[in-house]
Image (cartoon, rainbow, N blue to C red; front, side, top):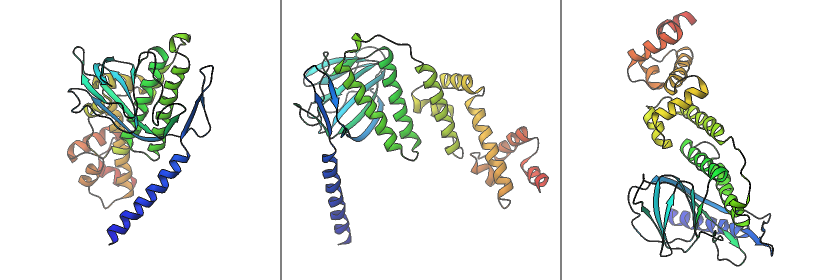
Length: 314
């Protein structure tokens, strides 16, 4: 009975939430001159992100009630949308409106596509069905380059980083980035990219700094776990060599050396603040199963063994 009551309560809460969401729908007007106007109630519901490498065809030709963007971060592939087959490549932003049958397929040449999906709902434009956006001249596939491509790539990296780190408020941060992607798409419909002059952009340096910041944050939060450069590189879909090169260029240190520094400082604090812990326990708490290896690294850092640190401070 309690289970049933709890379920009904959750349904009621969800219904009230859905009602409130409907009251806050995205309102978009298209003026007679083609200008797209976003009203103050611009507030779609952010659903999800998903990133993956397209190594095989999607199992089903399917549709759904929400809207999706698919951004191709690298590689090549194909998308079947509304019975049309589209070749896709790096920098393409694919719009999948609600109700459109679609299927992601592998490419016939080039490396597999790295695809980044963003799901949104509660979008309403005048003259269009719910969760529909106007399509570009090239149909559902918007080919991007230059500054727009850089901005979209950066937004995908930011959303994936928020998702992986799992920090406070990540849903709101991811929604903010997803909204930027939506607005950038709408701006392209209002004024095609080819009509705008290109400006120089410092995306590369900003992107590098952000990547390094996220790696450092990951170290700070997960130093007690097993961490490898291959693991970090795999999560970012980059090579270990590239990760190490960029990290050292920005910090002057390799990622592994930076991690060791964090672990040694954490170990020092544990040794001094929790004298009841054995050296083996301290070693395990900062990510080392081998206490002997830990002691060697500690002595190299501070010039004294872990046990000696306690005596010297005592």
